[in-house]
Length: 105
Image 1 (cartoon, one colour):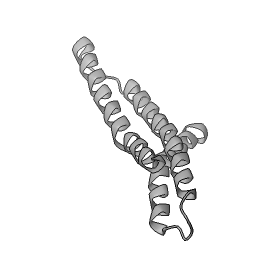
Image 2 (tube, rainbow, N blue to C red; image 1 turned 30 degrees about the vertical axis):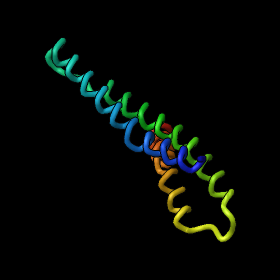
Image 3 (cartoon, helix red, strand yellow; image 1 turned 135 degrees about the horizontal axis):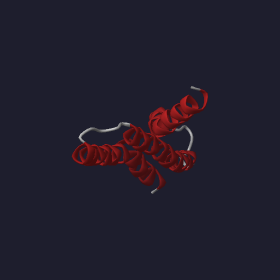
């Protein structure tokens, strides 16, 4: 159950959150073009950064659930599951790099 929930949350973090941010960004661009005739990209940047941070937070939850499920396996544990945990942690890594870029960049 923990592994399935972990994978579901990972799919949300990798695909659903960025897709929703893209759709919202397109909506903002259309509204700006309609109202002003031009569009500013700063709200879009904010949406994408927010989506990156939300994906990172979801990835933390998915990673904790994945590690708990991995620890319940009897030794020897399959190496394939470690690769799965690395994929689960990918949005967290991207969010951490983005946050570090904002702080130190």
